[in-house]
Length: 443
Image 1 (cartoon, rainbow, N blue to C red):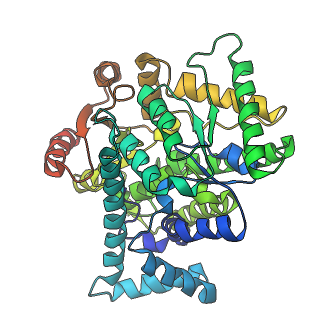
Image 2 (image 1 turned 135 degrees about the vertical axis):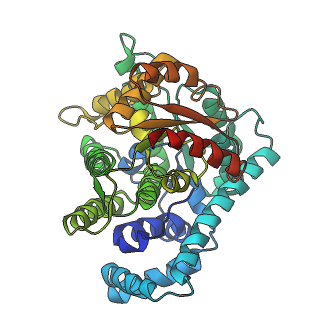
Image 3 (image 1 turned 120 degrees about the horizontal axis):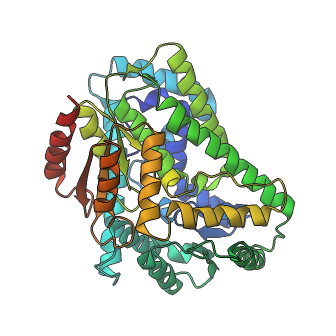
């Protein structure tokens, strides 16, 4: 998944978040072996209970070695002496005279390295017996655990409406014997909150046994408070800044930042306080650039809502949309209900239970009617001019609702098209051609 663009070197916050994501292996090794912290594998944004228990949640691809790390580590070392802002200013200065395109080549290598690694994990999943009927995301997640599952102390599993995803979670016990489950009813039946609260308490008890730490109401409230603050900054970027007629960077770069947020939000790069500092700085940097008129006028460029992406998508999408005169927006976590704040005014476990129920019943939803309503609601919230729907091969739960979505968007006169995705780098030219034809509608 592409997480860097041509002018990302102008944002120290993005450089830090990118470094923290890609250099996660060394950070996690230090936490595990030097600080004796327990590593908890997470998929999707379900890391908060692990943090509250004093563990380190990790989205497992971050335990991989990326070829580009030597450049980022060198850059990070420089910041120890000069600070991030100084290094960023220096990179911006060098870029003006960079006839060999060294900065762009480094960025290109990062993108290439990450995409290659995702495809490697996909191939490993297939080679190790994952069902060919599963989508790209599940195959890649399975492959991540094939290679690094032995390094984590437990897997924290939350059920969702996708039966294939839940089966994948069950299969992880081969690589990660300690399985911690939080099941959520697909419908908000009479005692659903109490059921989820009980499941959360059981998960907390298991986390306490693994970590040796006691989870208190205060530790839960502290973590949920961090999450709520992160969500506010995330939504500021997603809705306030994306709605501006002037962007702090070109729209392709803005989409790169949204994709970085999408992937790193799952475990907050394994350090929630650091992540909160970085995303707050990102909002500050964006607002400051807009105030100074540094960026790009996008008032004539249609907003294209691309979804879903969390199960796998072609990273060149936003480059193509930009090339055809549009601006791509990614908002999967709000569609799926993960950007709802957790109520911590009273019992934090009840507040978390209600948040999980919202995700299950109003985000992912228990049927396609609710799910398509979620897509439509976020499209309106983004003030999208069009929707590109990403239909994943092997997805029988989330992306099989395009015809229903298209019918609903027709009533609101939002143009919609569908593209097919199986693996990064496949059928790229066909996708570009289809997007080109779609974008002609806005000229």
